[in-house]
Amino acid sequence: MKKKVLVLICTVLLCCLFSPTQPILGATNKIKIPESVKDISRVNTYPNSDIDPEYVEPSSSTTELLKTCEYDIANPNLIRLLNESNIKTTKLSVGFHANIYLGNWALDYQSKETSVNWEYKEANLNKLDNLHGRDKVDLTYLQNEEYTVLGGLTTEVHAEEDVRKLMIAAAKKNTGLNLAFKSKIGKGTKHEVLMKVPVGKLGYLHAFVPAASERGIVTYGEVYLDVKGSQKKIIIKNVTQKGVGAWIPVQDKLSFKYMLSSKYK
Image (cartoon, rainbow, N blue to C red; front, side, top):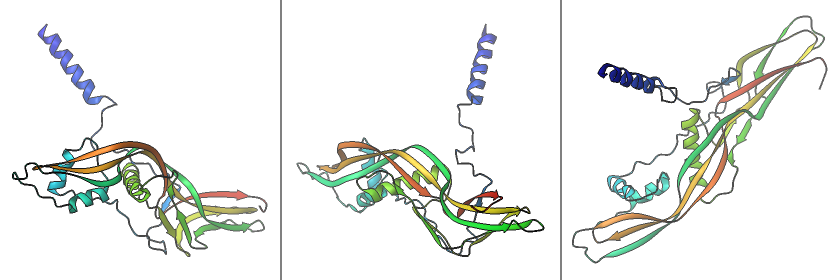
């Protein structure tokens, strides 16, 4: 009987360890980049700046304050404000009570869906006419004009700039891609993308800027700093939630599409 119980326990443990629903160490949920997408960071004639998600380290006093709050607070601007707040209390502060209103803030953002449109905006088109040629001809990518692609929120929201910071941090984490709400492709940018245009054909090489589609829920609330005697805590009132979406371009990557035609378009 004991052997049967031991075998049953071992079986259950093995099922838990190798269950497909369990996370695998070292595995990630990063977006897989298609082969048609090429990195142009080294050849882009316009140097885009890397924009890391803004993170503000809570001070020790802010960390203690955040523990008193029943809601998650991830807004770096609010954390910075709490870091700069210097309210000292002592045990002699008996009877002292203050309730300080800090404003209506975007507290936190929870990502619900992240995907990538690899052909978000067309940035360039190279053409090659080989209708009357005698041999195959090479068609390569060359950026004709400087191109700027802008992303943005698809929903009107309060505290838009704070929401943008929260959303881009989530999208970068979910995709592993270098994202920014503004990206440029410099004129004259080249890449070793090489296509063969057969005799009697017109070749078209389209270049697209990809963008991440980020969707989720932002939580808002009126933030109060409550000081009573020697105790300090954060109180959140009038909490609301709003669904938000955003398009965030991928920096220094282009998605290429090659097309052939036997007549002029």
